[in-house]
Image (cartoon, rainbow, N blue to C red; front, side):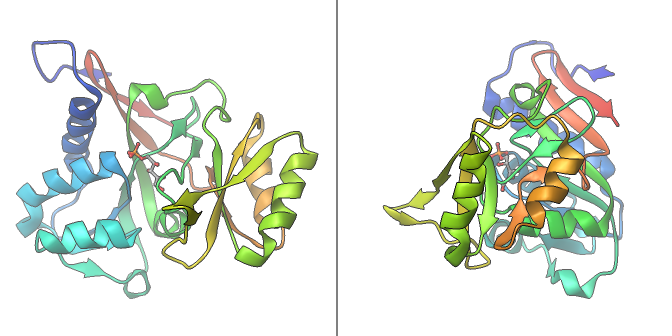
Length: 233
Ligand code: 5RP
């Protein structure tokens, strides 16, 4: 289903992100706590949330960056340990396929994103149309890794024919909100996301792999030139 949201059927990528961020408000239940992801698309959702903040109890956030934005708007941020379940978690993706399987972690928040997603009954993915793929693997796969295992995990990926690169920030290894590093892995074709996620997640030293198959999207609000398209899985 496509909902036309303006008469001009042409949007910039930024506008598409704003459209899906706004559309995600329909999934936020009054009086409840909402799960909030991380990234530039989620930032648009947080901006939209500002308009209805008095009707919600607050949020559980997946990163220090989103927490800061939410708090700046006066939205109460609950610790994930304070809640036992959420109706909905809203987050972006680096890739999403036709089954709702995703690659995430471009913003280095994948572990907390998976933790908050696991609390939610519904994962609503918000993305512009460039994120829709036939098969996962085009975007370099983020993997959060304990620093002492970086070399070992990189060699495991190299043995699979892929190339793992340590993500840098300001010339040094990026340190995540959890104090770990990120490997970005190129050259993978992820034909079986569920099996792949289970396999890599049990390698010693891997904190989380950025394949979201066990915590896949229930709904994707896709920003297209014609408006917001709703994909249900
Ligand atoms: C952060 C993520 C983001 O959801 C993903 O990188 C998409 O970000 P953006 O909305 O900026 O394209 O997984 O860790």
